[in-house]
Length: 286
Length: 261
Image (tube, rainbow over all chains, first blue to last red; front, side, top):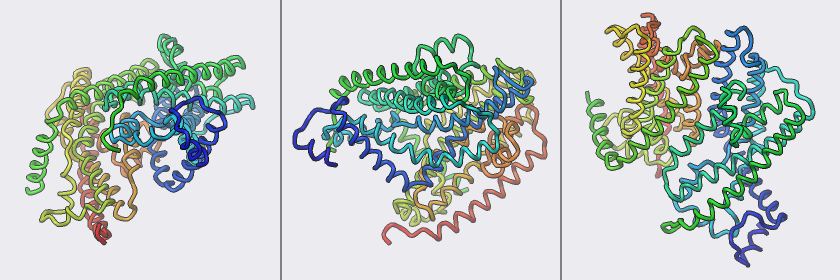
């Protein structure tokens, strides 16, 4: 609040890289707002979450069945290892939920962006803060679901302390990469207000190239090498495998560095797209 | 046959309305194409690791996928739009306008919104089904075809009943917007035969959320797996569910408090 009123006195153009202190204040304010809002809609949050859990349960059942049929394991994964993979998946997915291009579509079509542009704050910073603030609520609600899934599907999981630490950091990396990329995608709505097919194409690519559908080692070799040039697997496969896989220390730290690389790329991309996109914005009243 | 006439009337109206926006057809076709492509890639991946999944061969699972897309088209064009509108009307109080009309409230609330472009998925689903049946090389007899049609009709009616029951809950709990997300998630389980899932989940997907009847049973009809008992059960359960749904909707209606109150 204080940040906003102080800033109102001297209008500044929206910018991403502002004084660090001010940015942190904004993130904290957005986070508080998100927690207060989302706690009101616990039932709604839960419905959303249960709908989301169906996806990994389907993959888990299909691939466990294949593992059993193939004599106990497929691609090195036993049913217990698949259970661990897809239960950790549910946490990674929840952390990965970000402001979608559909949100941008609504925001731009309905002209709500006009109000946001008046604030001396880059709109994407608001989104980042709000969704990050929502996460503690999400993790709290996720715990009973994880417990239930673990009782039903019996995951085999024995991570080291280092793995847990890398996993925790990689969650933030995954969140930032996915947020920034989806923001860039969302900015396409400045040119066309029908982002559906483009977004669906992105989700299809993510499904196949990120480890969201199956652990990447089960994919054909050419898909794996294609994926290594793209950011997708650093938002699903890497965090999950950091916890449940057998990555070496170099792979763990190298993975975090690669995440950092993709965060920087994502931040630059969103900045560049914004630069061109905002010139195209026009709204009817507000 | 007043309900059918009403349905025909609303169908004509929405067709006239949506034909103004022809680009939507291509967008929908593009989206369906992406979905089919992804589905085929997933099937390809599964069958690169195993020759059959729980006894289902690749063409048989392709048939399941076809039914899943087809039923998704029916839900998206006929069922969900009216239910979304009903939910919003109850929340905002505009449901008043329905009550003042001299027609059956349930029928009117169930046919008001039809999105014809969503029906592209019905055609895409039929194409996928055609490919699957051609690959199966067992041909398609008259009896299986009739059993399939019957299973699709009753499967659709069961999904409709399920949607109406959960939407009726809005008379008590006002904000249930996420119910659509919940259903979309659960509906994805139908992409695979429900026999694949562990017992508790299989039973839930049969009698709690009737996805087994809506997708797996029609696919069984085409792949020569359907027993007459299952089909009789589907019809009986469908009729029972329709009767229960109507009763529940009437109870819910009594709890509607209106907009001006």
